[in-house]
Image (cartoon, rainbow, N blue to C red; front, side, top):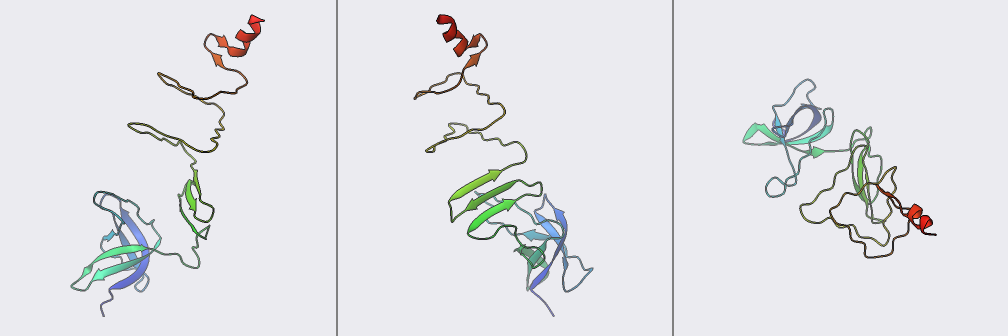
Length: 171
């Protein structure tokens, strides 16, 4: 009997071909040929995300070619539930990095365990009612600096001394 919908666990991944092989739940020990993994976009926009080895997936097969199939996606099961639920979207990576948007509170969180790089060929704008930066050190390199408002700071230190030392020496 031909089954066009099957569930199973990913047994191997071909990252270059964007495909996986699956061991089916209804046929333990039977591994599929490589199945292409469906994505949201593959033309002008491109999405790339593959399920992990051991991840539960749903597969569909073509009736006229029963060995040709696709992985529709992964699903949560009773033993593998999401860490957060509610009106949100998030990606949680194996190293602990998280990107999360909470639609109830309109808060976007990006928590990366490694380095974060943001670049633009033109302009990067950061705008908010308040912008807070907390760091062990803060470096700015620019060929020109423009400040459109009063700056409050404890001291400014440059190669030729500090602002406060300069002011104190005037008195």
